[in-house]
Image 1 (tube, rainbow over the protein chains, first blue to last red):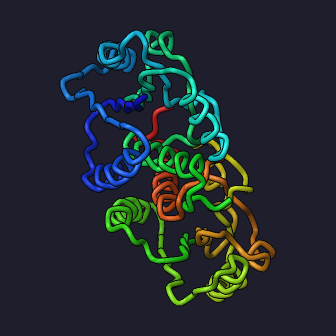
Image 2: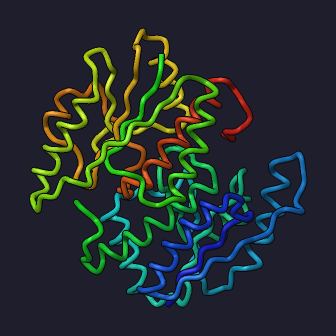
Image 3: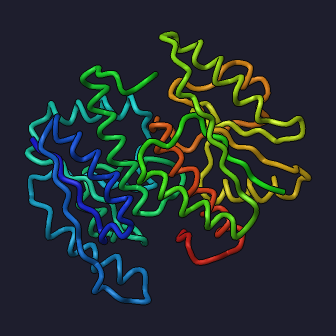
Length: 156
Length: 156
């Protein structure tokens, strides 16, 4: 099993990229983890729905039929860290070849992407920039593995 | 009115520091914002309660009697970004000289700090490292001001 993270738009802040890379490296100790960046720099519409639609097409192109697709979405399920770790552990027990998390662009996901999704996950009821969400996702997935393995990173 | 952020422990990752500083600079466009770092490097106990107690003493030393004290705490109140902006706006209408947010150390707050607190705020049901929480706090406070001022940063 591997985990893929698809993000829409390049990480523009070098520091954000660097923090994410540190956690991605740590996650790779537990299983194969890859990040795919969708370049949305040529998508220039004034209409948010059109942006979402075009980004949605690019997202769906990267998803294969057997991928288990989880959207990072504010309407998604909220977990605390222990519950999230249990959720990830349970996913690993199922026979998914690839679990694919997606962090959308500034306007969110198209209805086509929602229709394909297997699950939606909410990291916070607050909205964070889609750049900052990358840090939250990476730290929390790393934390989940330390909880699953009972390693001394997470304090109750 | 000013806002102070007290954090326990130096920001060890240069990138985290850099991301926070960017948002602190932006917050300073709206009102006076200061960060105070409590050096906990000499606090070395195996007992988490002792660490919290000693850190608590250092926190309370920095708080003056008129400060409105808000702890970043997982048992705190959860808001979405609009609700948080309304909360901050309401605080600004009250006549607090200083609103003081505190991000605790790895083990949380002592009972003395809880006893002094005026409010508790939860940024996410998930636990994040107290370093990463600094980024969440800074981005969300900046976002709150852009929502209060109806500036084009936050997409509904």
